[in-house]
Image (cartoon, rainbow, N blue to C red; front, side, top):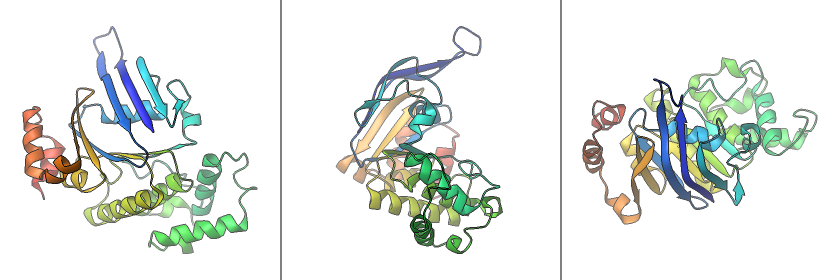
Length: 266
């Protein structure tokens, strides 16, 4: 489904600010894989997502999604089949537009429509309402309300729905609950698990929370210095405890990081 082969990226090459962000990274995902990604700040996690989403062109290597080489495909074309959520709940929605208008934009973009509003039928609106009701946040009764009036958790749940309204080939979750309070974060994570499972979505999720990384999905990888330094799956992952993974982070030289803090808080 997703084949990343030997990709590299260096920012500001040849200057004092040179930074090798990705280093000959390889990763393969089968259809329906849900992979959680751990790593300290600066490990290259978000840079990997930016490479997949097309925020920049990699220096070398290739990215193939569902048999299509997207290495040099512009980001706006990739957005038709790659969904993404960011840490900041304010990203991913248009605050001055209504909930219905935001859903219409997401629907028509992903379904390759050309006119976001004239092509949305009454049946589409009924489906929007039904899907909003599944979030259990009361948003189905606020479809004409501006998104800017919603709380952070409501906006993130709406963004999750928008990213999966038309099932994407790949869903990228970039610490999408990090800015939420614990109760809201737990609810959004539960929604994420439900939506990804029901639609068999291939998914990559960055997190600094070790328990979540081990509880969600079927694979976990650890990144350091722009490379993948560990992968857990199957029985080995199932047997891994928070303490085991913390020891693995210590072995990689990770200290005083949010990963350790989030694990120790559990």
